Amino acid sequence: MIRVLVVDDDPLVRSGLTLMLGGAADVEVVGEAADGSAVPTAVDALAPDVVLMDLRMPRVDGVAATRALGARTGDRPAVVVLTTFDGDDSVLAALRAGAAGYLLKHTPPAEIVDAVRRAAAGEPVLSPSVTRSVMEMAADRAPAGPDPAARARIALLSDRERDVAAAVADGLSNGEIADRLHLSVSSVKAHLSSAMTKLDLTNRTQLAILAYESGRSARPGGG
Image 1 (spheres, rainbow, N blue to C red):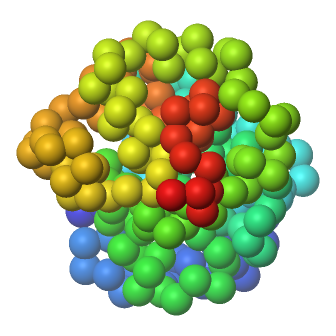
Image 2: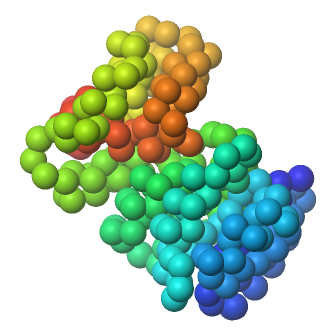
């Protein structure tokens, strides 16, 4: 059973998500919170596998709450952030802070349930096309040229790990990365895991953003 914590300042949104997720046989909403300030206590008490996190909350927003969860030691729940519109600047900040992905609040219920399942399993939450849109968002908000700090961090990886990270930033799935680099899918997964451990990252989305900002991937749409 996948344990979910729903965090949103709107009680109607919380109720709707709880009702919708309750229809999935393998998902249980174990609690709700109305503000990011309540998340650490709720996570300690309820041990969720996934947190559905609103971005806009009055006291502690979703970005700060996600960053606080990412700084915890030991087991950490996967975070999927919720936003009302695509292209929200806070989305990129939340992904950098450790969110596994994001959903629009009007996403169809089946897709929300699928995202929860994927997040709980440690699988990519963002589709390759959405990953590319995130890279475009990063490009729009970044200075021209590679970021020196990002390049220094990426330099900690082996050549093959850097190749895999660049492919993730290009929006490729594990199978597509395997084809590009002439590796098995299991080897791709092993390189991803090793890269994220070395860089102290929680998911492939963070790795994609870092690789893109280091200049290790093609510019969005550039091939």
